[in-house]
Length: 172
Image 1: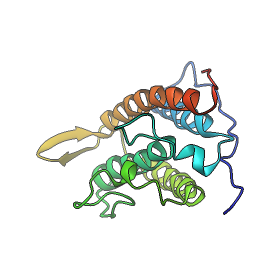
Image 2 (image 1 turned 90 degrees about the horizontal axis):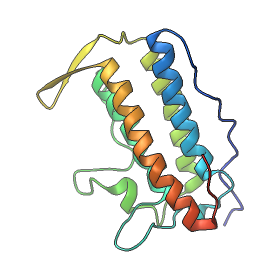
Image 3 (image 1 turned 60 degrees about the horizontal axis):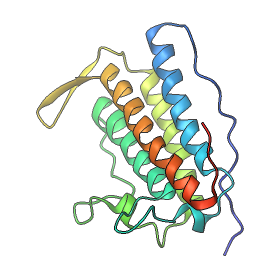
Image 4 (image 1 turned 135 degrees about the vertical axis):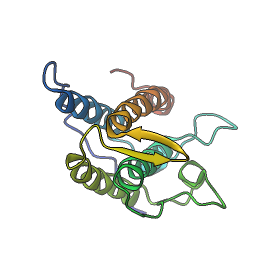
C-alpha cells in the first residue's frame, strides 16, 4: 500500500476578458482545476469513499468519469479519433464510477492529467465552428466547450459535497 495523496493544485482565476476561445478555455481550465482542488490532500481510500448508499459516486469516480467525458467529446467525437474508453464498456457503461474499489487512484490521476494534455493539444487545432455528428446529431466544437464547462460545474457541486463528507473541508 502506498502513502500517495492527491497533489495540491495551483488553481488560476479565470480570464475576465479575451476572445471567445480564450474565455472558453479559461473557464474550462478553472473547472478542471476546481475538481483537482477538491481532491487535493486526500488518500486513495478517501477518494474512493461513496457519497451515500446506493450512490456509487466518489471523487475518484468523478476523476475517472471526466477522463472519459473529455476523451469522448473532444478526441473521439470532435476530432474523429477512434480511442477506446478507459473505464467504461458495453458490459459496464458505469465502470468509471462502479469500479473504483479496486482502482489505483494514483494511476487514475495520472491518466486524467495525461488525457487533459492530449485533449488540450487536440482542441487547440479545432476551429470552434467545426462540426461533427454524434448519434445522428450535429454539434460544433464551441458546443463541446460549453458542454464540458456545464459538466464540470455540475460535478464540482457533487465534489463539494463529497469532500465535505470526507473531512469537513468546504470552500470555493
